[in-house]
Image 1 (cartoon, helix red, strand yellow):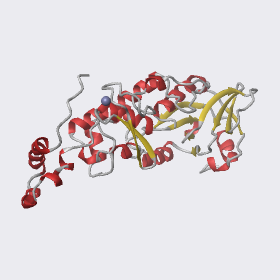
Image 2 (cartoon, rainbow, N blue to C red; image 1 turned 90 degrees about the vertical axis):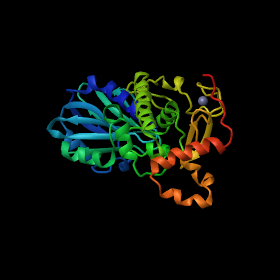
Image 3 (tube, protein in one colour; image 1 turned 45 degrees about the vertical axis):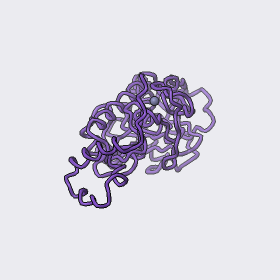
Image 4 (cartoon, helix red, strand yellow; image 1 turned 180 degrees about the horizontal axis):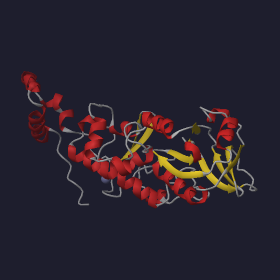
Length: 322
Ligand SMILES: [Zn+2]
């Protein structure tokens, strides 16, 4: 599934060639459901003769801005690709939307699984409201440990599951979430509200790092992602855990684990990313007669329990020298 780096790579590939170009028509729409808020005719009428003023991205949405405040937001969902092709070139199979520009250029939305969606907006306010209702902060510019902590406060679900929630952080999907959690050495099934401040800082930095590297490598073509010119990215050659079940963790050599979490696969290193944390073991180590300890301030109790856990828990495995 295209995530932030793939959408950003597409936006960069389109920007120079689309800005200033005028829309001359809409064609190829054989799947009306991909246009949830306007018909193909309505889009053609609204955009006819309008020039592109900007090509940008918010989360996994590719944004095409036009004169008079009009815009389109394209979401590729599972498998969609957005290609820039000459009008005379034959359209690929599964092309479900063509935006035709002056100068003989087509923007073509190719989407075999038909989950992709294109919204039309008549003003910046309308578009920003739509995006604001769905998307959390932009990770590359608006995320740090403190902001991530705010977004996760009181959320007990697995951190991996919440990273996939676009209202928590925009743009991260299954692949980059697995890579970021590995980078930050955090187990995907950890309860989000159990992450410590240093872990939140590490995770926010890891999210940025894996996304920035993904952009540098022009996206990950793990399945069928192609850039605007139909070329694959190279990030699939650098993955540490995603899609690498049973292969050695690049950091410690332990075979990479894969678990089902929700409906998705999660890949992680069981040695570098420990599931256990002090308060998960609390129930097992606080004696029945010491139950009143639970009323003590949370911080102090956690520190005490942590030491007890180290003492009475299973022997700790030695860290790998790497
Ligand atoms: Zn490892």
